[in-house]
Amino acid sequence: MAARNGFAMINPETTPEDFLAVCRELYGRRARGDLESTLALFAENAAFRIIGSRALIPAAGSRVGKSEIREALKAFDVDFEIVDFNVEDFVAELPRMTYVSWHMTLRSRGSGAVAEIDGIDRVRWENYRIVDCTRFFDTALVAALAQTDGHNES
Image (cartoon, rainbow, N blue to C red):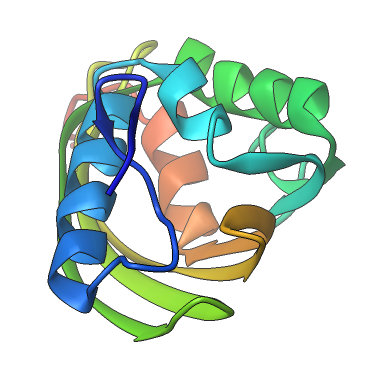
């Protein structure tokens, strides 16, 4: 496998085991705030969606193109800190489609409240670049996390 941005990239010789290692590295970098490593795998006009309402989470909704995707990820990072992010499993129909299940510990930057979030990313590939990524997770829980004051009410 060829290396770019300091980690192996997806190509015709990528095995499922290699792909899982790339996913874990990529998602780990994203959790540490490295947006550019994530964006390196996206096609220029890729689509990225977080299923949910922008009224609840500004990063939700559809974005097209790397600059819009970058802004959505930055918007998420303004409100939340990813404390921990683990790729748990994936199903791959390489090189066309992958489904990645993950677990994240998320902290609200405003309230300090923490929640455990599980989700799935459906990723469609063309020429070993992401052309469409849809993220499914409990956006209502994330929105509530942002609104809690971190104290129990009596």
